[in-house]
Length: 320
Image (cartoon, rainbow, N blue to C red):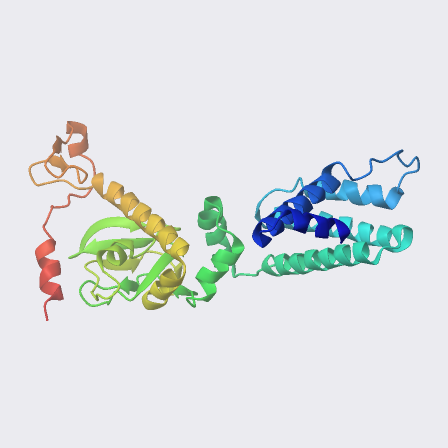
């Protein structure tokens, strides 16, 4: 107080006095923080104990975890063990309530995270058809079981049996109100009684129809799909799928890729069967380019398909 009074007498201006006093306090604080703190005169010779070192080793191992659900489980499991050991060390050796409290809180957080991840990775049981589709189509793309469960449960997907020579869709009569994927059997696609191609397992039954309509539009099949053998397929309702796509953009992009890839496969299958009446092969990828059929191909049993313009027919079907 005496020093402050003496300094105040030297500074008639009150603001100047306060600024100088604040600068002096700051200087003394940083000096005490950097140079005023006493340096350790000697290091302790005894170790903290095996529990403390075990906690440090477990923490280092936890930092080596990877990504994904299983990687997070690995990380949080080792972190939980590390904080448990540190809590025991703080309770028995250090006898520090604050050290024990913080480590115990971190232990509880890790346990909660482990429970949450285990709940997401709990065993999900599907029917055999769903499991086969996931293993063959979705799993190679890196789709997790949790996402596949949303695709199945949120849209009320179901497995339907189609007997031999029964029709899945009739040309011009069956509305386009679902999306289906064939699991077993073989489907024959025809238009006006003429054969187009086959649909094999793990292919969509109505991918061209799905891609040709907007969510707000309605339409009818322009082909007939008939089961050549006993078939089983997974079907999703169109409206429920669109609701799922609106909530999950990733699932929407996933189905977009699958459906357009399926359409490309069907187009390439058609490319080997389409001929015009003059004996030229019509390449659907290049509409203005024709390949002359080879002589040995003229005697084959491949059915000839006349190229027709279906655009006018679709427009007429959409008219009321």
